[in-house]
Length: 231
Image 1 (cartoon, rainbow, N blue to C red):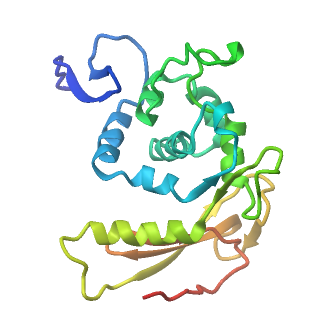
Image 2 (cartoon, rainbow, N blue to C red):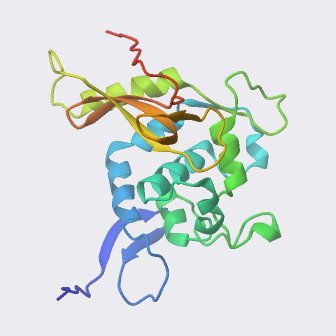
């Protein structure tokens, strides 16, 4: 039988708000494991370091979701199993996820726009702008103004690998693995691959042990595995 532990668990506070896990609050959220992800972030700062790899040309006085909020919302949702941006149209109502992201008002009750109150997090359309802003976008762009820096993200993956060791290893073994991500729509760049028998993207991963050093989203018409060497 399942062993139930009724005592409450205390986590890092959210500003002046205590964050407590208990079992008497009713059906509030099904993603309590997100609090553990937040504890990992408090200790490592990986999401914050990832957010630094974006340039935000928006008017900071006119926004409610910082780049750190948006990146955190995307990363935590993916870690919790929500792969589709459309999932966020429901997730933005979840106060627990808002607390994990770091929203000072996880209920969204104090948002500026009345029609957004009760929705502490960003919508799928806002997150779409984060993911699809072209690299040459500027502050003159109408909507997409948050530019990602892929080279910095690649470096961050290597830095996290090095941080996981008491001292940098003198040599490493790397493993290259291409794997399929099946597609069920008409996404840009999709191709049919005869070996896998469906339309998909052919992702390239470079691992060292359990650590991911590089990831590339590629169309399935690419069979080779080009590597950019770096020292």
